[in-house]
Length: 572
Image (tube, rainbow, N blue to C red; front, top):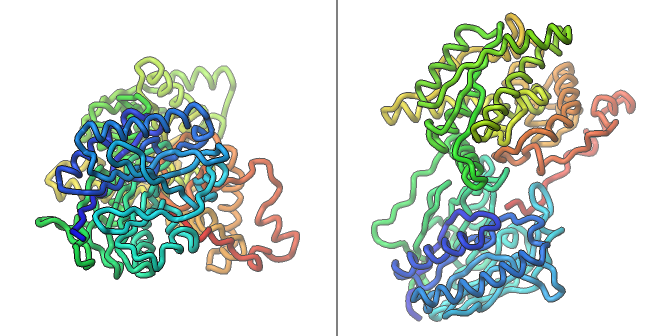
């Protein structure tokens, strides 16, 4: 048995773009072969893109994917790569005609062994049990005397199934194809799981992950290899395409990396969240055919952060920022918006809304909240007009805290095609902004966000002297309650037992429950936490269940007895 070199190709696939994805596989395979690899491992469903959702149920798409896989095998042979084993994630078909999530081995111009994903996640953002037929058994690939087991994502998160059957099979490595979306703090969980599987199987684990944005998901890459003891051997960079090389020695000892390789610097959680938001926006723009974006610049922290993210994603010259002052806009907010535009180098425009607002108010005789909402809606009309006339994608700038409690005007600041910080709590908005400015300082660059936008009290400036704290708890307290109620599904009694006061809990829960209908109409935005609004959290709009009402009716909160329903054991 000779030494075996394996490449992990971390690539960015586009759903449905079979030609571009096949080209990416060929490029990765050629690069791997040039580096002396005998096996190249690519991510889950890389040929079709992931997740394909109901495209998998279309016969035309199934047939096209199957044909493209066969063609790809022939193309690899024509590229002079007959001796290379290319493990490709793709869409397959079960014997009963249902689609499958598979890993196909391409070698010597043909499609060889095919492994079918066994455990199909059906929680959070995943609906695979609804779409795919499961596999039934393990597959072991033999290359150069080495025995390589195959698995796909969820198969290593759930006990039992094909991976359990591989225990005692004398594996030299387990190769795992993944389409694992980013979540705040998730990297450590993945590596801990891989360590458990490596020690149980008694062999190294090679974990390759997709990278790139797909609608509301961001795949962060961070592919890695651990040895049989679970110790980290090699790791890919996050949030960008990359390739890892490891070698299984002929004597069965721990895998080694090529000379000169060094583990990349590990980013902290806030830096990773910022990178995820940037990548999510960049790929949504690119994969949907846009070249520019437009957003309103209020001078506040949310629009400032979104503008900085957009500039990092697609370049400041491709960002249109529109200041839309009203009679209530403060001088410092107008100045901060202009300062931000100058720092980023975006296309800055000023369009006062007072004449339009006055015309509507005179005609409709609006006062109070209806008049405040009118201002937001005028701004939405302006942004959509720029989009219709010039083609940029409108960005909504609301954060998770605001969306949770309904502080978003429907058809106003909720307009747009993408919402980059939709899943970012307000306190983390400030943390991301500070990190971005500090990173610029460290690099000797101009911080993109005016420090005054970060430091001043938040206000919608829709009436004289307005501040968010007039009607909401301070954001540090609000976000703590939201993390309990939204992210952890705690009930009223559990929140009170955690030390929150009753008035705060009643206010926040009431606001969150009332705003479900608004969240249903909000644009897509990148998921960066374990419980994002959207596919993660599916609650009825029309419901009479209220935590506070249940407590009053029962004399206590039943949630204290029920506890919190745990998430499934598998969570790729």
